[in-house]
Length: 68
View 1 (cartoon, rainbow, N blue to C red):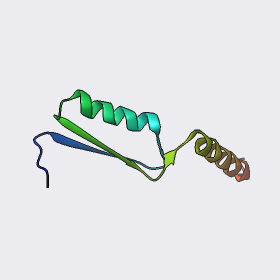
View 2: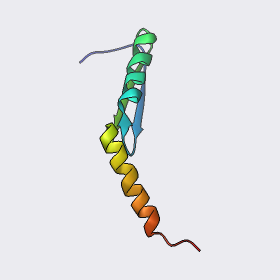
View 3: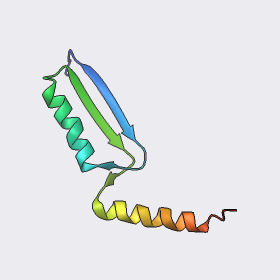
View 4: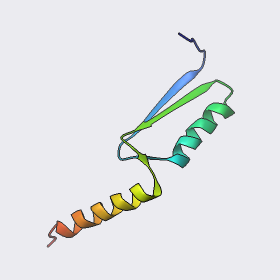
């Protein structure tokens, strides 16, 4: 088991994480020289296709809601 001296930041995103968000977490870890370790997780990884599919489903759900 590896021991470390820095703090650990755990981020969990419900509904999907984009590649750019994962990259940002990696860059923060690298930029702080071990003072912070950023761990990021999610229910799924968003690709452009998956994101557009999720928007379509959301739009269909909103159409099914009857508003006054």
